View 1 (cartoon, helix red, strand yellow):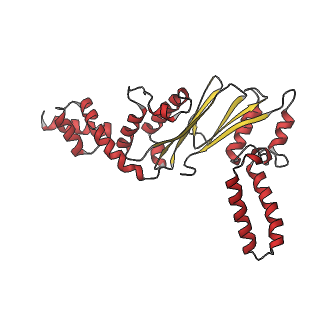
View 2 (spheres, helix red, strand yellow):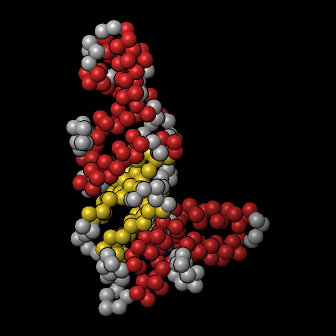
View 3 (cartoon, one colour):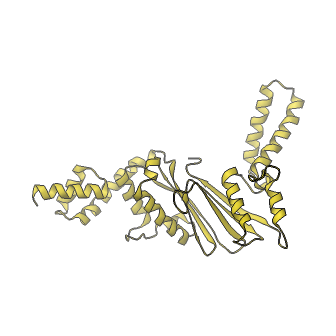
Length: 286
């Protein structure tokens, strides 16, 4: 192979893999100029490169939802920067993952061992994408709502493409069909108001205890007497529970009503009941 051909192949290999000049030359020397074999050879290089990036924080990325016959899957894939979240290779990878996630029913272990369209496993393509793009990328979380009970609704906030965005909410509701617009509005409410649970009893005790601790400390530090602190803290924790439980939240489309009022108003023969919900905000809690 002439130097000109070698340099041309190195350029191609760098464009295909994102790996540096020296490693690309070594791969081509090892495989006698075969580009496909060179990509395989560089997989180990890619794995080494990816492992160094695992200590970084990936708090950007995308959330995607997929719906087929009333069943819905959701997935979040993170990157380090929003710039990469807009990268075509990253977006295409996420789109294919969303479809596979539906087939895997939100099981991340099964998803990682699923084959993608190029014949490689998801986990291997993930490593290759990390090596190519040069950022930590993680498949953070996934879930699946079947259609065995109730109807599923979802809402994508500020979608960058159909079913792709930064905030996605899912809700499973009994007593209405998919055609009922109330379901979509409740999904929108969940995206906007971020409830912690369906009702007050569903909020984790450790969250309530921590909030009560903060409230009491705040009141004590303000100099109010202990007997007043207890009374004030009870009122504040009640407000916290109402503000963070879906049924007790103020309806985003009418501040004079609660979500529970909307469910009652729209119930006819069948009582409308929220069975479950999810809200993914990209990077939240990372």
